[in-house]
Length: 271
Image (cartoon, rainbow, N blue to C red; front, top):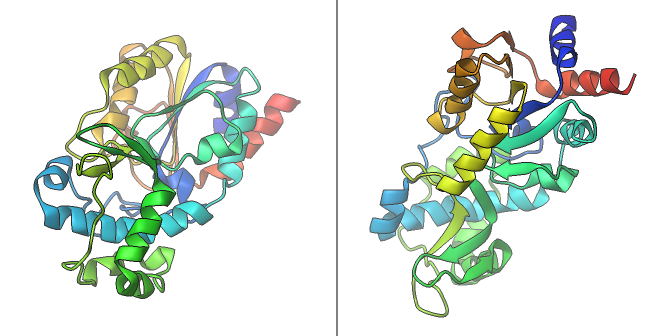
């Protein structure tokens, strides 16, 4: 533990990349376990969502349940520590793979939502934007029986949603043009917007090191930050429970929960 704190305090202006392990402590369900293996059915891809009504039914059935956890989730100690570290010279910017907005709610201001956000939904045809809460009301009104059944599912049992019959799920269309409504998040099989990726790469260029928190880096969109840091000869520190894709190129890897380490780092910065 002492080694990682010494490493983190030895330089300034870390770029921090966060993943699902940070939000798990707030009750947000994760798809993968500590070994990076799927705990539930893999998520609907962008191509499936756009092409198949059954895929959209499956997505919104799970999302209708998961939204309850998003609404109830509160920033945890890791979010709060990172927000406080932003006020020092320790942390230059934060890039998150999470789509829940908890970093901003904790007080972080220099945040790049790499994969977008799920608290807004847009029509893919006309671009009209809706708040996700509005869509939740529509989904519950259109699917009262499913909503009642899904309401008993707990966060750690979110996988049970896959066993429910969602074939009769009614999905609202855009009120303006009748187009498909899709969360403002990057789905599997889709690409991160170029300007967002360019901004994230610029922050990596400006940072003196990369700190990965709560991510297995299984997805290339996160792993590429480690490749950038390696190419630039910058230290890579990983705080994650379980193996990650970048363990072999990391300068230091700590296989523990991140909140306590982040709080210790913050206290050291305050000394």
